[in-house]
Amino acid sequence: MTNLIIGASSEIAQSITRQLLSSGEVVHGISQHPQPAQVPHDQNLHWWICHYGESHIEQLVESLQETITEPISRVVICNGQLHGDGLVVEKRLQDLQESSFHQIINSNALVPLLWLRALLPWLSKQECKIAVFSARVGSIEDNKLGGWYSYRASKAALNMLLKTAAIEYSRRAKKIKLMAFHPGTTDTPLSKPFQANVAESKLFEPEFVAKRLLEIMESLHIDGELSYLDWAGEPIRW
Image: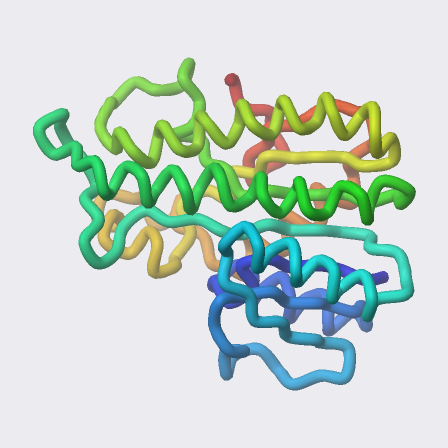
């Protein structure tokens, strides 16, 4: 089986890649960064560098189509951003900053949709399952604590964009299944500043999350719908 892992240098993506390679599957990892040392050099691994601008994504997908002759069985889009240099994780309205908001929305909502747009013509005749990393905080109904304005908004926007894309995919790519995936709080750099109040049993290792994601993807049925599921395979309220 052949897989595309987008955002492949993230901790969870690296774990997904290692597990797929250990099963003898082919992985095309796509990242803005060089292949991490933690990802083994393997004849079944192909690493692609891509800057996630609109034209770069289109150009890379064209290159992938010219290179890959076998069908794509899975696509996992792991892109996501919560904090970083110059970014503010807002605890109150006064913390909201225009520049941070635009960057988070672009990374978490727009970039995954640019990938889905570029991939649609290629995958339209294939049978493939696509998982996009969302988050439970993107659920409007589940929001009981407030805060994290930009991140919550970006994941809620992502969910709506994925729902809309799933409707179009169901018409134009009838053998594709889309899933918005909540990995839970995982021990990665993204969650590191916020782990202090997380119970030990609720802080997951990347290898565990990767295993659960692959199991859930395997169990999904192609039904033309968007599924919004957590790491346990349970539906999340919109």
